[in-house]
Structures are given as C-alpha cells and as structure tokens.
Image 1 (cartoon, rainbow, N blue to C red):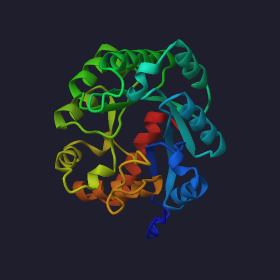
Image 2: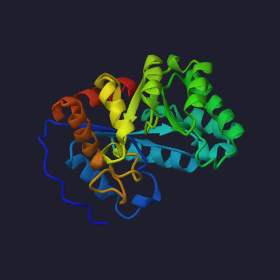
Image 3: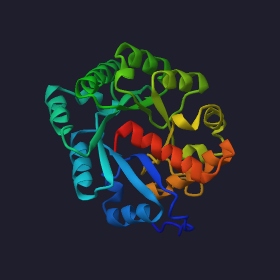
Image 4: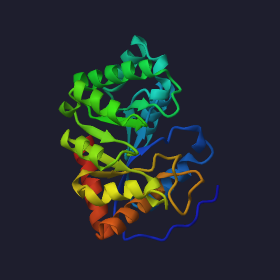
Length: 267
C-alpha cells in the first residue's frame, strides 16, 4: 500500500484515535511505518483494541513498546461463543497492566451473528460485570442491536463505569440515551461517506463534549481512502468532517475530542 502524502498540519493540532486494531495482521509488513505516519499527522495517543485472547496479548505488547499507545481488552461479540472462565481470568489479570485503559470491545452484533445471540448476550453481561469489578470504562460494539444494547447497559448499571459506543450507528434518540448514561459517542470514517446522512445528523445534534473520534483501523477508511486499508493517520479526516458539520474550527474539534478521550480513559 502506498498511502497518499497528507498535507502537513499545524503542529499544535493533536488528535486521539480512540479505537484502532494495530495488532491485526493487516499491519504486519509495515507496522512501524504506519505508527510513524500517525505521529507525523499529530496523533497524540492511540487506543488499540483486543477482541480475543491473542489480540489482547498483542495489544498489551504494542502498548509496552510505544508509550503513546494504550490497550483495551475484551471479547468481540463475534467471539462470544468461545468465552469461558479461563479467558475472563486472563482478561482480569491482564487488566492490571498500566497501559490498559478500558475493557472491550464488547457488545452485540445481530447483523452477522457469528456467535449465537444467547452467547453474545451472556458474554456482554459478563464483561460489563467484570468492568464494574475492575472499575474500568467499557467500549461497546453495537450493530443491528440498538434496543438490546441499551437494555443490557441499563441492566448492568453501565453508568457506574461509563464508556463509549464505538463506531456509532444508531439514531439521535439512541445517542441521547447513551449520553444520558454518561457515555461518549465515537465517530468513525463512515461520517465522510455520501450516504451517511443519519450519522451526520447525529453529529450535528449532539454536543462536542460527547464526541470521540476513531478510525477502527484497518476497517472503514474515510474518503478519500474509502475501500483501502485504514490507519490512525487518517483520523484527521473524521475530525475535519465533524468540523464541517458543526461549523467549528478544526482546532476546536481536535481539542474537544482529545480532552474527551483523556477524560474517559484517564490517560
């Protein structure tokens, strides 16, 4: 892959990519170069997200190697049917690492249903309970399961730890309900897509104080990279689109979303 050379930014404009998967094999051939590009584009910190035991271990290793990378540990709903006490013991023990700032991603995916729904629901409950025990915020995956996600968050008193709805795909009503529970709304590269009118409406209506930005790299690359491998350097395109929608300076969006991430993850 030959990423387009990005225009330089004012060095005072800094971003936090609140959700990426830097440990995935997509970066095995150029991980160091990809991380350098992120730094060159003003990415101050990155949260890399484990979705199974192997990737949680790799996320911790990356965080130990790069002081500006932090880890989140969890079991993605696609992997929910493989959850057991041994895995939860591993997550509980690994969460003691100083670079671990959250549990997740966890949640429900009723679009692909790679794990049976009952397993997803059980695993989601278990991880939220563990987050309360460890007093760590949570990173929530929600696809085609909006009402069920809200119900479980309420049942598990998720407001006690707070968190973020990653790659938000709900409507304004759902966003408002999540914000009322003390959650942040994380906006990915899809905000730049022409057909993202619903997400753009949500961004327009909710306050900047409730917004994080993310890449979900290597997935969901923003325009002008749509369809290609995503990477943290591209999170600026998310911020630029939010600034356009909000009619706000890019510096304001960068500063607010950075402060929001620091508040949530306690960097």
